[in-house]
Image (cartoon, rainbow, N blue to C red; front, side):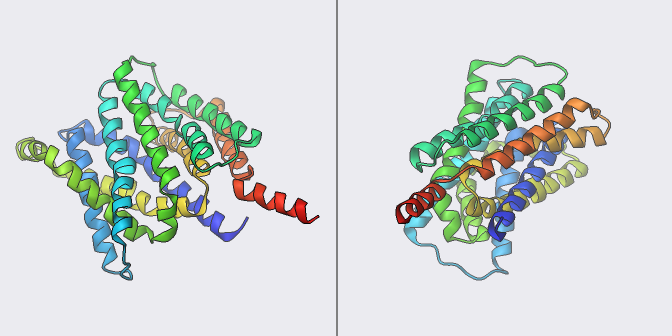
Amino acid sequence: MDISKIKGHGAMMGAEMLWGAGAPLGKFILAGSVSPLLLTDCRIIGTAALFWLLSLFTPLEHVSPKDLLHIFFASLLGLVFNQCLFLFGLSHTSPINASIITTSLPIVTMVMAAIFLREPVTKLKVGGVFLGAIGALILIVSGSAAAGTGSALGDGMVLLAQISFSCYLVFFKRLTAKYRPVTLMKWMFTYASICIVPFSYGEWAAAAHAGITPAEWWAVAVFVLGPTFLSYLLLPVGQKNLRPTVTSMYNYVQPIVASVVAVWVGMDRFTPGKAVAVVLVFAGVFLVSKSKSRADMQREARSKKRA
């Protein structure tokens, strides 16, 4: 495996581990006086500020007006629509339903990459995607006391959130190859901030009277720094060096990390079933990463012609 792929796998593993660890932290924050919309605002606006601050210590990179427009649409798909649809969908369905639906991300990405990027849908890739999905579902279901109830509206919005992020992974891979992660993300989060601020003024006004404790604000700060800023700093590195389907497969790492955290804090226990689930997830990632890409098949075809 070449160094670029090692870098890509490491970046995606780090990003997904941070997102997975952010799930229980987010539950702790939302159990207090911080509303979901206020947390989303803090997440997006705070991360935009951190990326602009970091950009002061990195070489200045010019972005063409055409690419700024492309980054705007990337921000809509990868941040605004994805996070808002998931947030409001979650408010209309159960956490277990939402978690199960998020396992559709690699499947949707594989289909979209096949349609728009003409990436081959090989038996190895299909097997890896579904193997990982089975492992993730085992973890999700075993970590839930009850399946809960949901609604068609909530489930549909969560599914649209996955489709939105799949579109971002498939359509904007070129941008991640062209610009540094700091440059790309500072503009994406800036556009996202501009989009959400007009709709959330009331949340900030209410926050002044909500009695949010210093401990809750510190938890929000950690949530912004780790599961948002650092994870989105790593995401473009993974996108640049890996195919969209491989990138999306790391979505299955999140329930593994959430399970480990739950076991660590005494909210759950480690069982043989969970061990099998972990093996299935990483076996799925391995199979998808080993499946042939369009470029691989083109090289093989050229070799056969020369032979």
